[in-house]
Image (cartoon, rainbow, N blue to C red):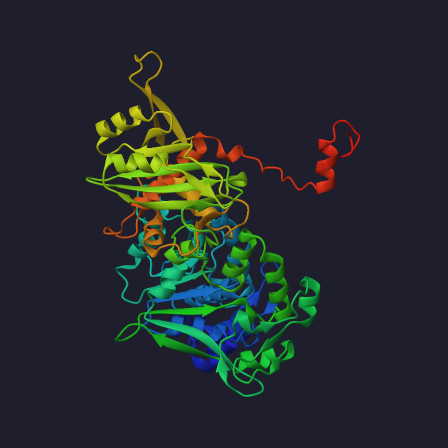
Amino acid sequence: MAGRRKKKNELGYPPWIMDALAILRPPEKLTVSEWADKYRVLSELDSAAPGRWHTSKTPYLKAVMDAFNDDFIHEITFCAGTQLGKTAAEQNMIGYAVAQDPAPMLVVYPSEKLAKFTSEKRLQPMIKLSPALADKFDERGSKDLELSLGGMYIALVGANSPSELSSRPVRYIFFDEIDKFPKWTGAEAGPLELAAERTKTFYNRKIVKVSTPTLKTGNIWQGWETADIQYRYYVPCPHCGEMQTLEFRQIKWTDGADETEARMAAYYECKYCHETIDNRHKPAMLRMGEWQGEVKAKGRAHKVAYHLNSIYSPWLTFGDIAAKFISSKDEPALLMNFINSWLAEPWEDKSSKLKSDVVMEKALPYERGQMPEEAQLLTCGIDVQLDHFYFAVRAWGAHMTSWLVDWGRVETWADLETVINRNYADVNGVVRNVNLACIDSGYNTDDVYTFCARHMDVLVPSKGSSLPMKSRYSVTILDKQAAGFGLRLYVMDTNQMKNFIASRMTIDAGAHGSWNVYKGIEREYADQICAEQRVEQKDKKGRVSVVWEKISSHAANHLLDCETNNALAAEIIGVRYLMEEEQENSSPEQEEKENDWLGVGRQWI
């Protein structure tokens, strides 16, 4: 009290006026990075190195955080790998906004459970440890999912809660790990769109998106591609000084090294002077680095994006990156995680959108019209058009390995009859015939049924189901009164059959289970096989399913329909149960012994 009375005597103002003037004092003129260096304290619950925040340890975060201070920038996208401090950077922006420019705020996480965990273990400890935030925090008036701070609030919500996303206007929105968000929220739009609608009334709004990528169609990669400016971090070579981005292909290690050896010996090679860069060079390179942007849109930038992979992490060595790749490269799920979380690149799912080059790469050295010796059964798939037919003949062996034998277009029913009755020879000249052919009956149905009735020994009608099926196909008997000899109609789930083809196409040509074509395969065939892609589809009740649709309206997909009928025929005749045939490799002596059933040798006379 004595101190306060002295203060009053010196300035001539009572204490309550001084308190009021302190409230009216404008905030310090700081950037986000400067504020974090001065006021941010890392909690032991949130960091392996608790204590004062130092931007100098992760210098690449400075420009990302300070973009928040640019009045013209409304949207910041940070696509980054693990071990880079991206979540801490986002929390620094949150703390800065509360301390320097308070306004309603929404923080969106993939789920409500994660939002609650982050509130308890990250945000609340950050607020309590910061001298610039602790006095503002009304702990008694706050809840786990709504924090009250000096006249503003922070609402934390899960991306799967549409009512919370669209219930209140906010100036700030922070999205965390947005590639884990659901594509739709109930029967409404996506969570990003719902939340972003809440900022419309604020001219000075800020939207921040942070995540590791998953697919090219994911939220964070779309944010990167649609930004007005795309930034990458360039660092100088310690030898030649050339500025460059750190790329995985420049990490070198001895061929055949295991994880331990690669971790110890891996180094980085400058792409310009080819000198060796080791881990001791990295801290100085990061400090001297700079963000360089590629302008994607004309005019003033309102949306900016930053891309950074884990090679830049001060906590990871070049050997750590190499060892992680070696442990992941042979397992698709692990490799996807390495590409997404370490390289910060989207995973390209070849089975989602097939390219014709992928089909061309499945060619093996056998001729059109022939089949390999390993083939045991033949199927034929037929697609019916207005005045012609497309067909594809495929051979099958053990492990559901298959080989394209022939394909083409015929004009008449008589020509089609020739196709299904034709002799096909393997590489040894052994003649085989089509075991089962499936023909689409969705068009010219009556004519198809009549043709199938004349060739019931080898041909059955098929039809694609309009709804998803639990099994791959079902059977309906047509004309049941025909003394038990009614025609059998096979109704198949075409999405399942196309998924089967796509998954087999990811296997190397010639390997067990592979889907192969003959050498010199025509581009027309490959283009038609790749005329469709998998897309997510939502019905009126909000249920999401994955279906196959044409890539473009004019793309021809007749041969893909033929191959789905081949897949159906293979299922019907039990190709998946085929076993490898035993090879007869007996020597002449063994054959002579087996034929000498009298046991007296050649001189038995």
